[in-house]
Image 1: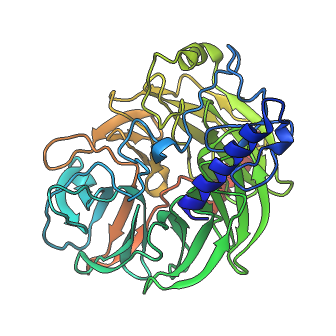
Image 2: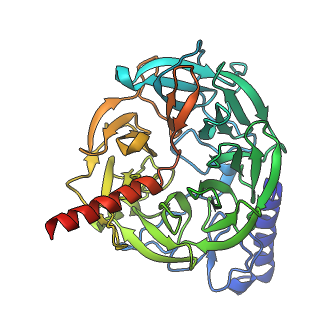
Image 3: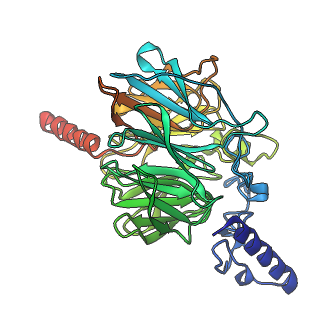
Length: 463
């Protein structure tokens, strides 16, 4: 659906309600998908919510900050959804090539900052992929992924999908597709040859040839408007396409068709999946915590909230402002073996760590493991290779085992990296990419299996 259609539908709904008068029933209201909102209320993004969910109380503080008023959905970050896709910019220039190295990439508007972990994450270079006159802003960054099979890194901007050849650090291709519909976060299939990439605030995802950028097909997500985040099962068979809304679409990569939808209690923010894609752990608006959904049943089975005294009174106070994309948290990360779940707490500038049991039970908050960040905004967590280090959008590098900050990522000007798009990258001696990480920190089948084996070994040893 085009943005103009969204606003037309919203205006039509408002006009309908006005025409019917104050006594119009909830069934007369149409949500963003054109469906009647029965016994509910529409929030400013025209999502049908229960009256209880949109009533602010001490127990359930609520802010309706995620509407499409001016398309400024994220208020505390450069990721502004403007009609022309523009956003705040960083810019510089870069040179060179490298080989036989372990590097960390962080994407910012117009370029990728490259850092060297072996030298305390010192700045290496800046790979520039977009340049504009000084009076025009660069396109904001929505996501970044990489493929050893193509030796390319891909950056989704609000305007283009850009492929950069890692042999040359030059743009191999840049696709706009239909103007105004590109692009959001994406994922790479296990063979590295196909991308599944969200459209920009539309109701579909593209399946794309990773070598050429050509579209291989479209996955329609009619109940998941305003596409935002997505995930792919480790085997590459399923995709989980989430909007800045309440309903996620689960689709098949083979058929490029939707299989089911899962509706959460509020707008879905960052989410992760476990090693076999049977559970979804989703951050939501108005929640410092997450909801867990069972993929087989398509139902939310558990809501996990941080202790109320940590955040609810602060969040309920409209005079207090927090970095977090209009949510108490923006980000969620799972260690590869799924033993821990990390949340960036925007209300208290810290990371909350939850222990996640092997028996399928519910995660529990472990304040002894939780830690403060350096005070810079932290809206994302990326787990590095083998889950040894975690990269924060605040620029912090954290030792996962000890939960201690061990380094800071900075650019060539000494500024803390403010990027939610970070990748761990390893090259061979010939300068070819040989492995990378997922931009979403999801469960890893191998790491999970190793954890299960360790647990069985420990049990046998104790008997």
